[in-house]
Length: 198
Image (cartoon, helix red, strand yellow):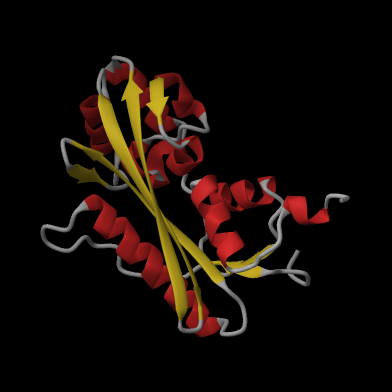
């Protein structure tokens, strides 16, 4: 994949790698590490957009010849952002805050090549069934929630919590594919349909 890469993915997320592979993208992974602390009063869509752009720009500085794709996701309930749980108690508190109600998942995806850049946003509403603290603790012990915004993975064991979803499933996973596709087309990056017979 690296030799025929059309762009750089500035993320260590295996979920984002899998989603890009799903649509036939050819890319190389080069994760960047940035301070992800929200700014005071920063709206969720502004927060994820700022981080996605910053990650793509940082990757572009390292690989000036190729477009760089980056994304960021946050979960909010009542407008309050939820990061990644630091320990079991925080994970249980997060999941119980999501129990029996809807929350928002904001994801931004950015692409940068030199001075050129573009950004797309995805907003999805997810509703959880009522949860029990015991199952939240058992879920934490699987190890899955530790590095997930909001403390759950919709594509993994945490799928059993989800009652309904309105918006982009792939956006909740961490990379909204419709918006990512727009960026790939904008930067003339080929994917699966480019290889199809005419």
